[in-house]
View: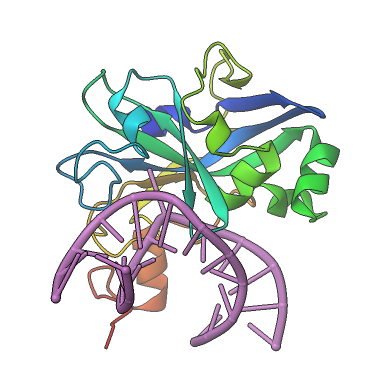
Length: 202
DNA sequence: GTATCGATTAGC
DNA sequence: CTAATCGATACA
């Protein structure tokens, strides 16, 4: 619900040395006790505390010993749910983002959740920020999807909960990480079944 | 206490 | 495909 509504909206981050902003083009939804892929699946901890708080706040976590990821907390206080921001289309502050990322091409600046947080300059220090008050904000202007369709497919990078099509993105957008066509279309073209696991583990 | 594994990425 | 790199988690 909230995940789809966030597609096409703008996130702006006002931290030194200047504003970096981008349009949301790819997200993933995570829920609480019913979603084994969610950080909130096993209850509240110091790390995921913000997910259990009021909506409209940033949940920023640290993972793989080197990356941060940005989420938008949804649902009322006490009901953990969040939307992972996986990719933005750069709009403002491209030079600041380039300096932080060490990458030049615009379409690769904020492609992937770790890259989004890096380009915006976010760390655990920004966990819990109010996304209406700032300095990290979801701007109060209508979503602009530029005629692109909202497509859905399985979430990326998880090993449980993959059966739920809770990854959403703007079809064909160059800043989307991973597959850009719908899962169904992609499976049809390749003659493979979406239901067949593509990866096994010894 | 030790062992394992990530809501990832860059590079070969 | 793997290394990087460390906090959270599982388990003895």
